[in-house]
Amino acid sequence: MSLYSSFEPAQPDPILGLSAAFARDERPGKINLAVGVYKDSDGKTPVLSPVKEAEGRLLTKETSKGYLPMEGGAVYGELVRDLLFGSGHPVLRDGRARTAHTPGGTGALRLAADFIARHLPGRTIWMSDPTWANHPQIFHAARLQTNTYPYYDAATHGLNSGEFLSALEQIPEGDILLLHACCHNPAGADPDPETWEAIARVAAARGLVPLVDFAYQGFGEGIEADSVGLRLLAQSCPEFFVASSFSKNFGLYAERVGALTLVAANAGEADTALGHLVLGARTNYSNPPLHGSAIVCEILTDSDLRRRWEQEVADMRNRINHMRTLFVDTLAARGVSRDFSFLTREKGMFSFSGLDREQVDRLREEFAIYIVGSGRINVAGMTEDNMEPLCEAIAAVL
Image (tube, rainbow, N blue to C red; front, side, top):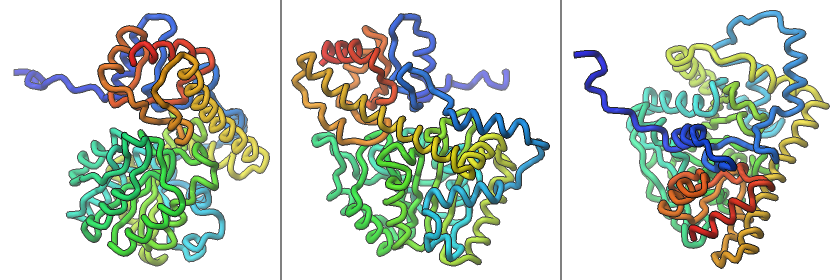
């Protein structure tokens, strides 16, 4: 018997599998609202202009392809922490934060999962219902137990803050609380500052350890404004983790640039915990990739490049918000009576459309429009050119 003869075919990833099917689809005018990448007005994932310039500079001055330290470069870590907390934040001033450079935000989550499994055994990871489809798979791969807390109210198309906070009161002491910093994926509904304050109070009182997934900084309200929830947590919770990604806000998808930042009760414990994170990295990917982090450092340490980067992030955010409004207005102009105005109140690339699986299947089969089975849509996949056929198709299946 051959080595793999007993294997059942692997089930494709629910999102990446759709992208593969989209690539095989030969129909003209096909539309992909499934994959979680930013698209510009031409339907392409752009290379940001400051990224291109930074790469050119790096090519001229780079002298080595040697390994980075296992935790990554010191400058990169400092820049990551400054983006998260702001320069001079008490967490940074007291030396309580340490950062490990990881292969993307997914790598940061897996590094955190392995660390929790090994050093904080028996703790359950509590995730929002719903959450990013890959979250439970990452934690299960690390042999961690998971559970969910109520988050999204499909009837109101918004955050169910009452049930959410009540559920947090029941989570066992010491468990891990997974939170989306902003631009919730897949719901697009975020806590307001008052709710963040309540989350922080409950987490501190219950002794919960937040793990904040921060994949979309700058895509919600702005680079600084999107850190409000994290900074409110930091006022109450002495220990927590933050998984960062620069795929979206720098457009560095293929470079896999992320970080895991841990905050400890004091600087000595932060150093000790980082040492164990580094050992976890050693048996996983050993050393982080250089090129993407070098681009981030080049941009964030140059005033002109940083100013241009912040403007391009704002441009991406504004385009997404414009597509939300245009989508709602175009559906109404098509005579659709269902109220989609909730989309204009949500933030980031994703929202639940309210379309059911049968409607999603019809959109794919009849109109070559690809949407995740849950009805989640990537608003950034909409353009002014595809808006009319998209809304016409949705009107047809409603």
